[in-house]
Amino acid sequence: MATEQELQSLFNKLDIDQDGKVSIHELFFSPGLSAIILADTGISSPLEFLNKYGDKDGSITFEEFKKVVEEAGNLN
Image 1 (tube, rainbow, N blue to C red):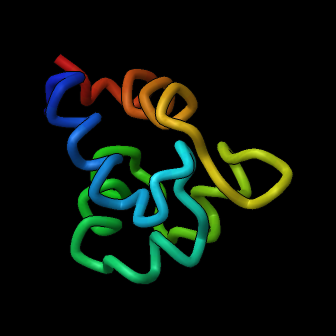
Image 2 (cartoon, rainbow, N blue to C red; image 1 turned 90 degrees about the vertical axis):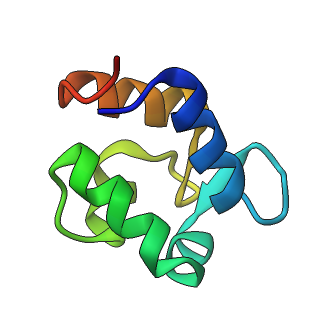
């Protein structure tokens, strides 16, 4: 389980270009961090994660990400 602050910190580390979204490329660039996200959400792959929860452009915002983690019951 993570706090919102910890979740934001993780998201910021993944958002390499700091555009406010995490893309599939950014998820694959940081396999250790993306593994944490996948564990927190119960999804088995970065591509499945973005297809299910991301925007049509293949990325996910922090608010979208937070909602997924909340729904999985992993946000304090």
